[in-house]
Image (cartoon, rainbow, N blue to C red):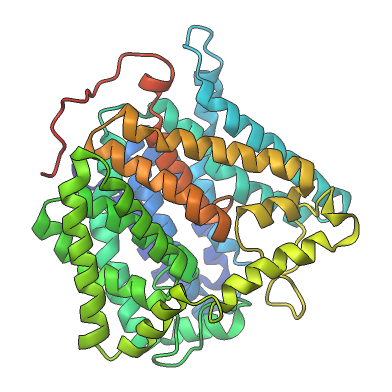
Length: 460
């Protein structure tokens, strides 16, 4: 399958080139361009749209930093709303597809509908506080990936075309972001240093050589590591050996230098899950050997060995796990809050860069703070419902593609939801893309599947 994301790539390049001439005006131009590109890509095909969406989420933060360096720092980061508008482009098509009286019943739509209702509640809480900006922006960040997944699920089929398109774009994204990530660690460039000095992010390390927690072209170590771990799994299982090794080498090193353990564990759990199934067992063993070899090589043969080793040691030591202890403290803080945050705070949440502000780690904490206990639990249950349905793809479609999608859904449920969260922004978009592919309409709605268990897995 060829890449069909060239209009989006041109938009990214044109935005960078125009920044010096247009200054801050390039930001709204980029946002409108994203909306137009999203409409154009969806008209071409769902596969072209998925490829362009991954490309945008991977490189829009990098474009934002270049624009900020040329036009001045934008504290709101409004340029990053462009990818969200891009994935909202298919939303109008839902009106006709969902209003068709002859379409078969689709029970998969129930949890997204519940989540959208909870998002409306969270936005209303912010509006009651007269915080209209956060009400709108928070609602878009949470709802755009959900609406996008509903649109994709209406187009998804068991032939795996959408997953093939996603794997194809990761063949391009992984080596570019991996190589840039290593460069960023060794010698952070002016635009990266400028952003780290002015942004309120507290998890990217320091803007000096060998002190950066690699975030590559993305908006933070968590986003970069999540995309990289997902791409490594897709490329590793669905592409021939020489292609996957060439792509995985720089990406694996970049993932290690992000120092983001959640994605390390996510990748490990996903590979272990794939060992259970005959379609992926041998490939999982090969990938395990390659990844272990990559870690050993990074520790022994590179100047980064000490920092990687130190971070790996914290996986087995509770006393050294400061971030884990902080996550437990978040639950204690919320439980001791007035009325235990029964109603929630909506999307009006103090920036973690402000002194005394509590970080928000994991889907449980995010739902609790945003929507309170009753509504937050309903929202959380709907996310668990979706993830479990996605995990079932490993049994509904016992091919290599189905097992990999099930592994990603399970790791999101067991690792990402408790530790990172999948509700907003680019991580949410990736999560919802994959669960939509794991629950294709021709299976969930009862139509005959186009792929059978006896089909030989691709990329063998």
